Image 1 (tube, rainbow, N blue to C red):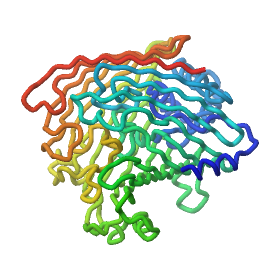
Image 2: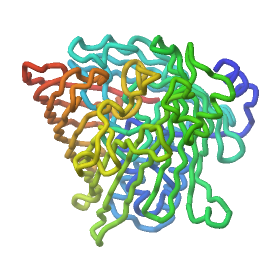
Image 3: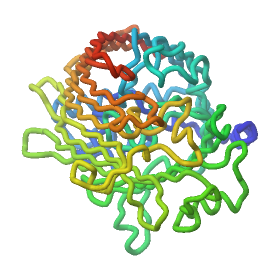
Image 4: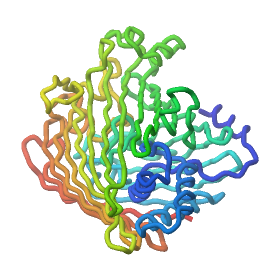
Length: 499
């Protein structure tokens, strides 16, 4: 990592450049991006975050040259322009403080506190082709009532990272960066913000490109991201590497597909030579899925799809999403899938630019045949996010790196969010969650099967002193309460200022 960062500093160019991307954590911004994507202004895949500013800025330019825009689209463009203007400053600073009496059970795309107290401060500088963000996050000790909150607390250097532009549209990067791969609102199946970001180095495309070759050009605008992260902690095999690869494309104006792969490999006491890494990357048949301790690593793979398009002449857009991640198996055909399905609408309310985003999302993270156990398919309890070699599983700080509810869970969420004409975002949601369907000992969120209901409401209120976010949650039942059915009232407040 030190050598990589030093190399980036030496390679700094002289071209002025803005912040390379915007990370996950702002649901209001994401709704605006998806609106412009559905109307054809933003081109290329938008379901993986961080999302490059160059891609968003092109969309803003297209929208501004398209004449008079409907009020809700014009409002979304104005909000994105303000964010882009801030991201384009050569030097900028951010301070965030969050507090809650009890951390939320579900970690959504919108930023929530991982523990009872959380403070972040950072500074960002654009130095020609080199972008530098430095800072850190302090996180308080976890709750004695939630096992998943008790690990990897204290100080972490996130969101510190460096990114070097290579040519016009590629970047090499290294540091502590959050990833969210997939169109889900309540979680992502392979990489989400459930766990704190690991130190990583990577290489990615900034603005989508088209492959100018027969057949492949039909893929449409395409993006690619590859990184190697280190889970720097004491565990079954200390400090293993986690490799992430994503290839996403937009074959039609309204449809996009992302192909994802994750590999857990190396670590203290495990082989980490070129042959082992090569077999893991090939990951086919006997190269990787031997069913023995000779396997090079833990493999996960999957894909996600989203479909967004305007419907009728009311300005509404329809959103359909699907995501799955699969565990490896001792044969050629992958057969153990977890899945996430969503549907929703987004569009204007009134004539003053207010924007409504509403829908539902269903999660079944128990591994099963592709159609799922609810359709009568064979299930594999305890498989998702677990591995017979890496027994601590697909985790960092004992929290799932994928969906925050871990494997072997089911959940259905109904949500609605209104961004009003003053850019305040009001939201409500209801969730029914079943944790640890079969009381599997390896399940990390609850040692016992629990059915939990959560009702939540809140607001993100922009002021001249920063954004204030406040929410309240009413939760019926909780993890690890097999003999009781407690009712929990949770409140959360946060403040973010940037200058």
